[in-house]
Image (cartoon, rainbow, N blue to C red; front, side, top):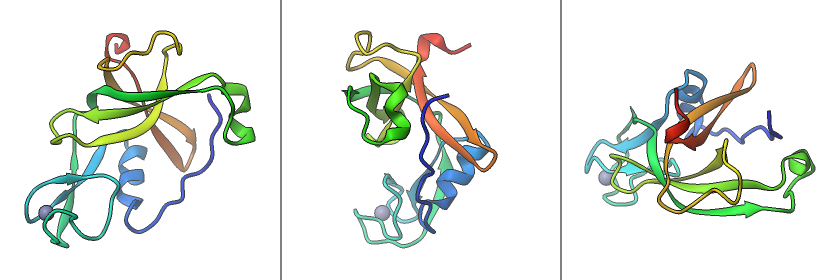
Amino acid sequence: MSGFLPPAITADTAPYWEAARRHELRLQRCGGCRAFRFYPGPVCPRCGEEAAEWERVSGGGEVYSYVIVHRATHPVFAADVPYVVALVEISGTGGIRIPSRLVGVTPDEVRIGMAVDVDFEDVTPDCTVPVFRLARDRA
Ligand SMILES: [Zn+2]
């Protein structure tokens, strides 16, 4: 398991983390214009609608961009370097991009456009973190 810092869970983000504990990737979707959004928030940035639901998405996507972390941003990640943080564009969401750890891939292997799938790391009994791994590695 890699280093872990507990997420700052708010009223807006709690459904995301609750879904992750069930190993589901859910994104907030506007009840007005039906646009997905990420980061979660109380109001649709497109149309101003407050009503929203949390819709389960496939979790498949592709690497839109990435960085290779060589210097840990916090001591808990020191043993993990170098590691890959990717901006993953989620299929079927109209271009929603989520920053996440890319696991099971070495820094020199990662490429923009790689197909990836969500996976879930149960880091504590109370917290599960969505990560992404190469689609070819899925069982
Ligand atoms: Zn909207």
